[in-house]
Length: 494
Image (cartoon, rainbow, N blue to C red):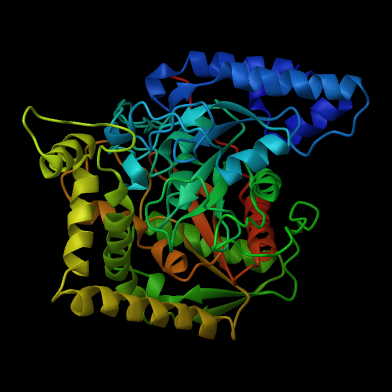
């Protein structure tokens, strides 16, 4: 029999329903893989009992002849940004070390209601701030991939959802939740050869998800392939009265609507995404993606997004500004870390707690955000950035007059080595150059693996869609997936 951990979400769901194996068999197999993979540092908390309890409930329901839940028999990983009742949730930061939520995030509750079980809480960049998973207070996540040059340098799994991408790529879970503020689902998916979709802003509730930048944060699934992402997103999404930004819309049947036939669709190629210094391999893959989509029946048109070059600087004003406001709640008074030097007053406690609890990157972004919101600089920076954000959204609206979807690279390079960019924040921020514009506009966007570079590392292609057109994004991604035939996986070394 095929190793159960080689199966994706759809295969596990269908095999369980057919009686090919029990849900407990699946959960036990993934629990064993996780226990043997500490070298990757993908999990901050392991919850084998949670996975087994959900599996036993699924097996009992099947034995009783009850109709199966959508994700019955499927165990998943949960990014440590989602609050989980009775299970530590830290956002990979010391300032929340020891925090055990008494409530469940809406996204995680939706997944449990759909029958999924939790294998554990996944490591991440601290407060979702990072592109390499090197800012976690609990150590770097390591990608399961290695370069084929004979070296064994540890590679970044991308960020901030690096624990999720590493775990899915290493067969520690068939799917995992991620969050995407400026590319934190798509970029790590590209780095590790998996698929991941950021839905339209508001598709998934933000309630119970630790906030980074509230006008940008959006949850989404990361999994082996497009179908698995469609299944998982269908369980995660939905209206939530507890989230004022939640869209009051029915959840479409995305899996049922999957089709790789793009006849009649127009795919836009934004000329501004051809950035200086783009590696030839990225350029070649992009052209290959164009050919694949044309083969699927799509018409290819060139479009212009003229304000793209301003997206990254605008994002790194808006996101830190919102972060500085959101993270003000961590003061050592109510929960989490409290550092109270002898004889210290309230202000001293605030300062000591935040100095000890926040990592360097989080402090950097809080300081940037506080600066751009301060009197005398608000109009010069924050107001201008919001105006640019409006112009970027308008660029996309005009592009939709010419096309239905956009095709771009996901990231400007393959995975880099841990430590190679950590001393240069600007170089690190440039990893999001292709993903940030759609985040600022709140658009659905997905990364799918397209091939390998000369070092044997995955490269991803990105599909961007109109607001609420997750179906179009999934379908175009499926067309790429079928033609790319990407089956590469990392050799086990951990």
